[in-house]
Length: 313
Image (cartoon, rainbow, N blue to C red; front, side, top):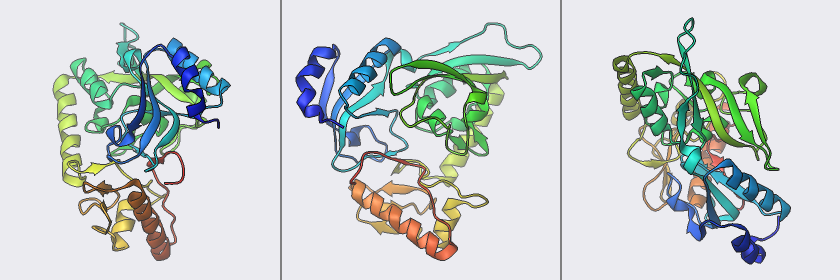
C-alpha cells in the first residue's frame, strides 16, 4: 500500500468534509488502547462512502472501518491510511413495511451499519418489536454485530437477518439475501473489505412489558457474569466447539493473571481488561500467553474473537 503522507494534498482536494489527522485510536476503542490513526474521516451516506472507497482504491491507500470500537485491538503504533467512521444516514432505523406478516406476526426494519446496538434495542422496545433483546448492554454497532454474527445467551444476530446492503472494496453496492451469506459462529462469510451499510432485520411483535422484562433479564445476566464496569473489548476468544473459552482459561489457572496493565478478568476469564494503563502490546502478549497455556493444558488453540487491526503490535 502507498503511504497516505504523500497524498495529503490530494486528499484535501478530494474530500470536502473534515479530516482528523493523527487521532489516538484509544479514543475510539472500548479497550482504550491504540496509537494514532493517520487520518479519520466520517462518511454520512452511500454516495460519500462510494467516492471515498474508490479514491482510496485508485491511490492504493489502506483503509479501515471502525464501528463503536467494542471488538477491536489497535496497535500501539497506530493505523496507517484512512480510518472510516459511519455516521449520518448510516445510523438510522426505519420500518420497511407498515403491514406486518399477519400469519407470522413479523415486522421488518432496516438499520444502518453505524447505528449503535443500544439505539436499535431502544427502537425495538419503543415499537414493540422483539428479537434483539439479547444485544442489550453490548456497546457495539449494528454493522460490527453483523460482520461478526454477534451473539449472546444462545442467540445470534444472524438469526434475525432477512437481507443486507453491502459495499465491496471497489465501492460497488449490492443487496444480499440472508441465504447468500455464509453465516457461521462469529462470522458472516464475506470478504474482509466488505462494508455492511444496512441490515434488514425480521422481528416479532410483542408487548413492551415482555420486551423490557427480557432486556432486564439479559442485563442482569451480563452484570452478574461479565466485567461490565471494566475496560474491555468484550469476549476476547471464540468458544471452541463443545467448550467454553472462559472455562478453559480459568482451568488453566490464568484468571486474574496480568502483564503490565493488561489483566484476565477475575469475574470472567474470557475478558482481557485494561486496568487503566495497558498498552496494546501488553494485551497482545497476554493473549499469546493464554493461547499457549490453554494449548499446553488441553490441546486446544483459542482463536481471538477480537479483531486485531494493522500489524506489528
